[in-house]
View: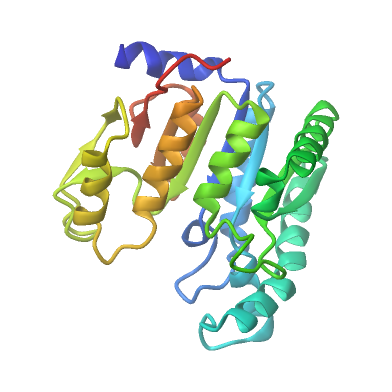
Length: 268
């Protein structure tokens, strides 16, 4: 069953790729052009094989930190939102530059929680996304950090990527992290423990594994819950290390890299 599911990954036509801030930024939380270039190169290799790619990208705040020459990432919400507003254009400019080298058009989509809870807005989101993919455009999706408020915010791009995967009818969601999988006995990056290669179902036990083993390491629980939402819709999820060379190609080729979350049912 597990081997069969891995072997089915190369058949995925529509792929959502979620890339976290740490995959695109340097040690000072500033956007690193070379890392954006790496992601674009790997994405275009998949495009050359006829894959439809949707990128859910963090990095706007990191780009804003760099442009404003801030010493660190702001903590107060108004300052974070202002930094994101500065950085969002820079992030898209960088994507446009690197994808432009391949003559690949891209489009920016800034979303909030209301785009998935309001039926009319959700319908518009799906129609716009379908049109972009039909035209061969790569959508670059991010939460609209500069206008979000607590009542409408999704809170993180892991959750956003799950919504996008389900709403777009994707065949696969790939979450690129700097950890690269779910581990048993995780005690920091130098003592990661045993990599869980396959999760057949995201249960409360699996969620507890994320919270207990990744204490002090933000984001693992949100990734597990994003995987739960996506697999319930019949879409497999792979959590892999975005810093590894050719990681996207290897995931889509069905290589045993990262953690594979099996779909709970067949996608409609």
